[in-house]
Length: 211
View 1: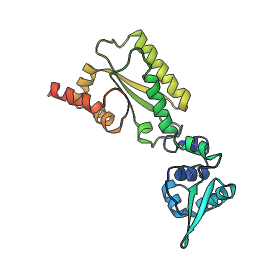
View 2: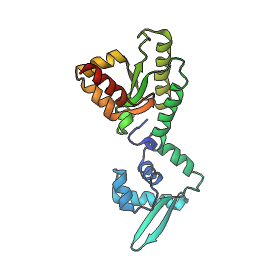
View 3: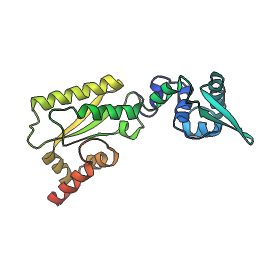
View 4: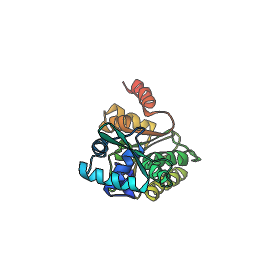
């Protein structure tokens, strides 16, 4: 999945970029504004796409002074598909949360970080996960390993992207905190919470113990 432009996974042309901008807008946008938000193509190219989409009825156009303003026609039969594709990253996050909620042996904390969390990845970007194990769960626990393997396979099945996980216990996370491992800041600053308390709460506790 293209995490930078999810709709591009299915509609890789300029049409996809234009539709993604319109799906995320709650007011009319000029062709130049759509081009600026899309960040690809030329102004002329974007206007041609808007004209074509307007002819299909999927996009509405209204006059505002000397400008033409474009909006996604959310009553169009195809609009729901456009919104679904534009919101794939959010759907992905919700799917991960739902799977983690079914775990027989739940993590203390689970988070999504890296390109998938920042929304700037592409079709080749890894999906990076952080899992904090309960303290009484050994790293070779069969159930834990099975759950983790299934989660990684779910990521690959849903996105087509490679997946990797940082699997740590709280004491192991404390070591990273104590040694000022820069990954800790990355996890804290980038992560989208998937399960359990926010990482900041855990780090506050650990900082108090190690300093």
